Picture 1: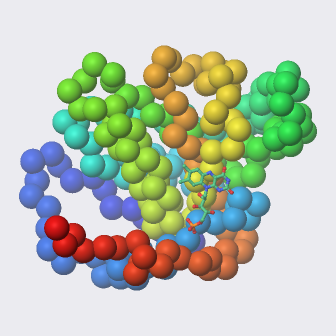
Picture 2: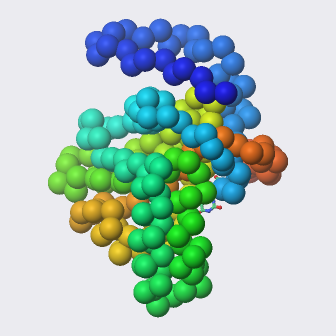
Length: 208
Ligand SMILES: Cc1cc2nc3c(=O)[nH]c(=O)nc-3n(C[C@H](O)[C@H](O)[C@H](O)COP(=O)(O)O)c2cc1C
């Protein structure tokens, strides 16, 4: 069921972040992506999608560069994008990853697809690496916002995030890259839990 997302605070407001919302730890501790073939109608409507994107953009961003932007695909735009992807797939020398009909269906796997474009400023004092990390944070925040709104979502790249013809189709400029495609819809099945990192291996205490 779609849930109402909180509105944006007014700039300059002091936010009460001491306690955090009830259940936040549980929400994060059990977060899962949806399966890429398990996202059906309905997706978020225009107003909810706008809320999801606003929250997605609320990420750490060193020196407020805002080095990312969004391209949304909803309704028939997904079919037109799919048709264009099919043409690109057909012309690709390497057909191992996608044939034309598979390509045409990629954007149809969810009612709403959002391309997050990493758009770093190479001349900015903030290193490009930090700007690109911020774009990754946007993708993850969108997963959380979609889930908080009652939807399922998954972050995928696939070949369409690494193809120069797709970049041109999307109007990417020099230095811009697709950080990910976020697929958002109503989950038809909960994805089973998968193995999680062994934190005993991942975490070391600096003993220098
Ligand atoms: C940058 C990035 C690209 C990804 N691309 C794909 C992809 O193309 N195909 C895929 O099956 N999973 C991809 N994933 C993994 C899924 O988003 C997801 O993390 C995975 O299915 C595990 O689900 P979980 O988030 O519940 O742990 C990608 C993840 C990241 C961070």
